[in-house]
Image 1 (cartoon, rainbow, N blue to C red):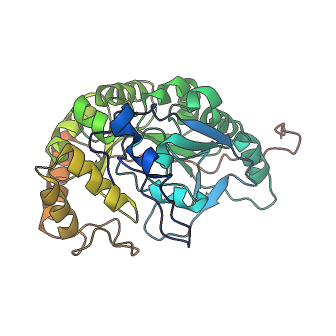
Image 2 (image 1 turned 45 degrees about the horizontal axis):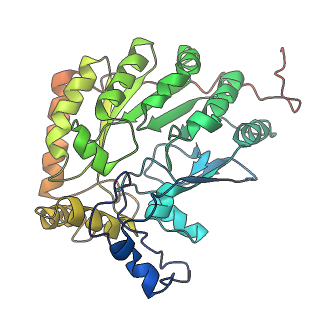
Amino acid sequence: MPSSSPIHGRGAQSAQVPQRFGLAAREADGDWLDARDGIDGPGPKLRTTVTEERARRIISRNTSPDIPFDRSINAYRGCEHGCVYCYARPTHAFHDLSPGLDFETKLFAKPDAAALLRAELGKRGYSPAPIAMGTNTDPYQPIEATYRLTRQVLEVCLETRHPVTITTKSARVVRDLDLLVELAKLSLTAVSVSVTSLDPKLSGLLEPRASSPSKRLDALEKLAAAGVPAHVSVAPVVPAITDEFIERILEDAAGRGVKTASWIMLRLPHEVAPLMREWLDVHYPDRAAKVMSIVQAVRGGKDYDSRFFERMKPKGVWADVFRTRFRIACQRLGLNREPPQLDCSQFVAPRSDGQLSLL
């Protein structure tokens, strides 16, 4: 159950124990522990922990017919940004961890990411195609400042002339501007920054440890000015909460040199739906029912439709309204006229000793 008061600095308002995969439900530690906050006051703040994971490979493959890439890299599991709506939260259930608070406090890092990438790119018969980063958890979440795994992966991509795309909610991406500029000169990268609203207070509730909206827009401006293809993603659109910002986000981004844009309707798979309901009950009880009513209206009466070709295409009157507003704004602002094209022809496989061939 959600806390009676907001959990400050976190997106999820409870643990949301996973009930799938036959995992055992967690039990309370005893009546005295359940009641201690009311007797002794709030306990210590939730701390973020990081477990280093020794993966066997780093490139994840998919055959999904409705997403534009077939491979991705996630150097981290879980995400400290704590975006309450994050569709990746249910992946923590595979670790017998909560898609709620555990997802944003119990993180995993893969310190061998760059070495694993080099090994996979060097395999006989490897065929290059753009690698997507930021598809499951943010590659520039706060622990990247310490681990620098995303930077190491970008270094390998530049060395091997391999195309790579990035999606993030963090202004930390500009720390790798030197690499991104070199990749962009070779038509090997494009960077998408998600901006959900322009209200820092709302952002602090929805995505408490992500960069503020103004810093994300500043990052887009710096990327565009440096010649890196910069893309703004109005994602997700939370009906009756963030949809008022659609046009203003696009206007601000276009004014900063951004050339392309997209939008994504709120997606609530598995445990994300009850987490979102908890968040609404805590922060927006006056419109919680309205938000979920619209969510279900665009998903055929359900919280979510996971079918291919349906999950990414909301339907109905509300979806048409958002889609039309977005399209008209993009036309007015001259967005999406020349989408960037990444070049796969320059790829040079790394040698087993870590050096590139001169020929």
